[in-house]
Amino acid sequence: MIPLDHILVPIDFSDTSREALPYAYKIAGKFGSKITLLHAITMFEYDPYGSQKSFSSADDLYESIEESANNYCDEIIENANETSKKLSIEKVMERGISPHEVITGYAKNNIVNLIVMATHGRSGVAHVLLGSVTEKVIQTASCPVLVTKKPKHADLQELLFNNILVPTDFSESSRQAMEYAVVLAKEYNAKINLMHSLEVRFHPAYYAAGVESIFQLDPDIKPRIQARLEAFLQSFDLSGIEVATSITEGSSHTQIVKQAQSQKHDLIVMSTRGHDEIADYLIGSTTDRVIKSAPCPILVTR
Picture 1 (cartoon, rainbow, N blue to C red):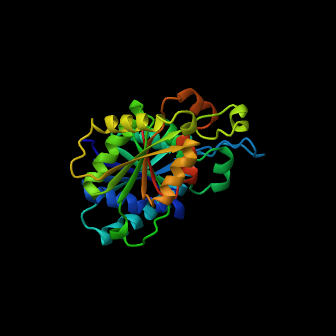
Picture 2 (picture 1 turned 60 degrees about the horizontal axis):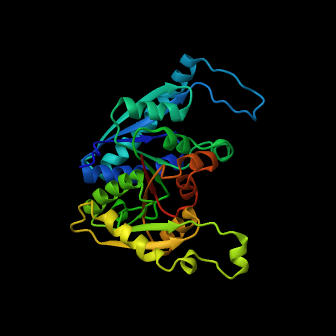
Picture 3 (picture 1 turned 60 degrees about the vertical axis):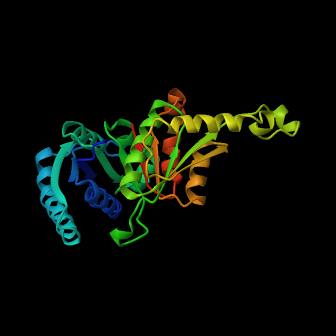
């Protein structure tokens, strides 16, 4: 059984960071998890485009922010308790150089099983230019990260994971993602769609000859991929879970987002790395691109 005993929710006072809370509450209610609200008090933020770069006094900065941070977290906890008396929520203030280091450091040192956070916080424009805190957490965290989107339903009872999409490239990393999907599907009585996208680059000569699909060149490739998908599924306990498979062709991140939109998936579960780890590192991983475009939350596993 995959543990989900301790959920970490980074809070930076922004409305966006609060959007992660309903998801954390819902998961904690299902699995009996403890929730920790973490506010990172950063001493220095480096901006290569800014004209001023200076260190603040650590003590002065901590004292000026601590009171408002405590009050803010107390308000969140009070509102959560009004919604559900069963939630166990604590607040933590941590000092550090950068938010993502504070978040990942706390998660590693305190046996956190899941980090739940939104895509952007207070510095939305800076994040677009420099890479968001969420992206850095995903790259360095020791545990899975649930990247949330703004909930469509205000009522937490309507916030469910009914239809889960799991992209796979048959790597061990994607196997780990499937394990999490199975746990969630059983808890939420959800369906799973296991998909594989064939991303093939053709020489221009093929297009000139009218060949635009790998299925034209190799008519047997789809049955072979289907057999691999079915073999992949055999290693999981899928009792009580409705599972479908799909095979697409094209850019992986584009096909994943299209599947999520067309099939109305409410959760994507995928790993940070697959077979092509070096290319992912150099040009930006498929996971990063899906996070930017997906219409639903993404659970990113290790």
